[in-house]
Image (tube, rainbow over all chains, first blue to last red; front, side, top):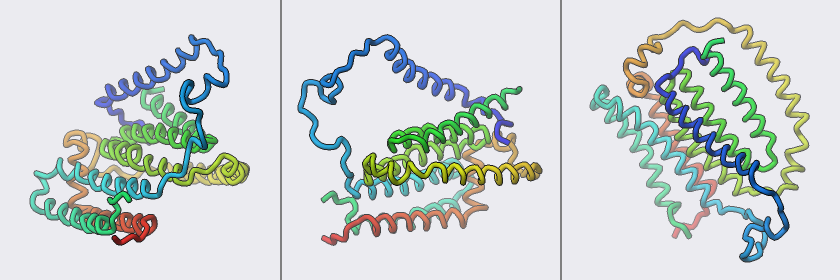
Length: 123
Length: 172
């Protein structure tokens, strides 16, 4: 069951998180309590003294962004595997090195495929 | 009530609440942001399971990369409010019923299985004396060598799949 072990080393991290949430929420809630609220249509416009907004605020993104995000996820996961490999490198030795090179090589094949397909070219 | 229980109860209640917020928000971008909070809570729960590496991976991969993917998909589809309301928001009685049935089964199964498995060689003290990431590295690259290499094949499939599905064939 979770909670049978307490990571005391991470208490400072949790305190930082708690402060971050408190400062963020505190600013919003404090402002909400203090500020006067007298809205009118012009004040609520995105640019009070700028161009009047035209069209929808959100528009359909190009699918090219999705490719970039997907490739980012894949190579992010690849990088994640390198952390334990780097830490345990001394213990693993040559065997671990060859193993990781095989891993990187397989992904390199994918990288070359992506490159040749022109996914990095922004037409 | 011990500290362990207090912490676990906080995470259990917070995660349930955040999950409900994720599925009930009208604006999909708000759902994604609440999901980000949920992922951070899951990472903290991994810390309490003595899985530091998994907690870091949860933040790096899920909160960092998968969330970007979620946001891009939402912006890609960019459904207008009327469309989402018609398609998704009328189905909540069905999903509530399905969740209730599943919850009953889940509670029945969990209440039957109270026997914890025998502790392996990687006890809390063993992992702490060596370091979490060191332990993961040593096990992953020796005992679980094949799954690790298969992971690269799966990632390769993901790359090729994304390109085949989303890339227009402009061989210039």
